[in-house]
Image (cartoon, rainbow, N blue to C red):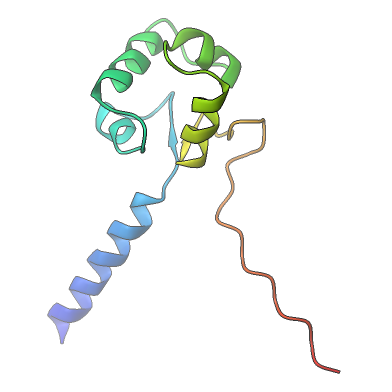
Amino acid sequence: MFKKILAATALLFAVASSFAAVDVNKGTAAELDGIKGVGPAMSKRILDARKEGEFKDWSDFMQRVKGVKEKKAAKLSTDGLTVNGQAFGGAPAAAPAKPAKAPAKQ
């Protein structure tokens, strides 16, 4: 029984961590590679650009990292990448939305 609980807990942790946002100013190469659309080459470009200083915002990020324009930035943001905790478009990275409740019966 204990093994089943431990396995379930480990599985839940793995699933939860796969949906965690990664900030370009704090993420390691491995964490950046975990974002869909970011491979080893892009994570290297991000880390190299970050050596010049932290990214101020998405605009700064797109100017300094080759291959990232608006469409790519929006996709990366949707997949969990943030710049200073902000999703692309200026909105703070939010937790997944809760489903709306059905209207109460009268």
